Image 1: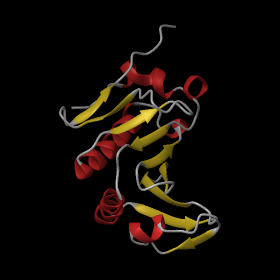
Image 2 (image 1 turned 135 degrees about the horizontal axis):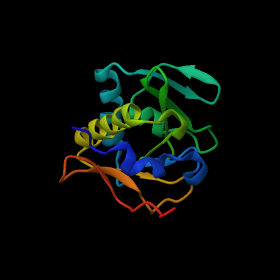
Image 3 (image 1 turned 30 degrees about the horizontal axis):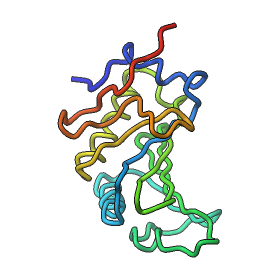
Image 4 (image 1 turned 135 degrees about the vertical axis):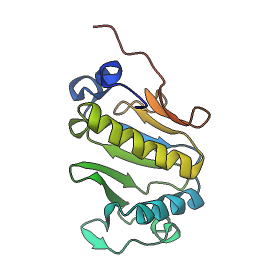
Length: 161
């Protein structure tokens, strides 16, 4: 059974209305949560690429990625959920796990199911909500993994058109 049905949420996946790169986050995270996320990526066998600026490096421990000099470029981790669905994690802070997805890659029920499964796996592993906000609208999530419901749920109503 799908967490969400495409016809009920497609408005939130319209790049023209929501921005093409919504912000996805795990609030109130820690370095341990970051490490759990990195371990999950490895355990699931998701194709990934870690980089600092233009340099592609081996996947480090979370402690190393988060302990960089203040003038260093922010590391990022690209994780392919499927061959053509990418999530890009940015190591801005150990207090929140932030990543982007491209809404153009998440069109239709099949891709929505892949995305919801990804959010569920992260949320279950960390025991925390995983929230999607429209691009640049932090604090106003539209959907996310709900711990109590153990699934991805709508957190806002689509605007009437």
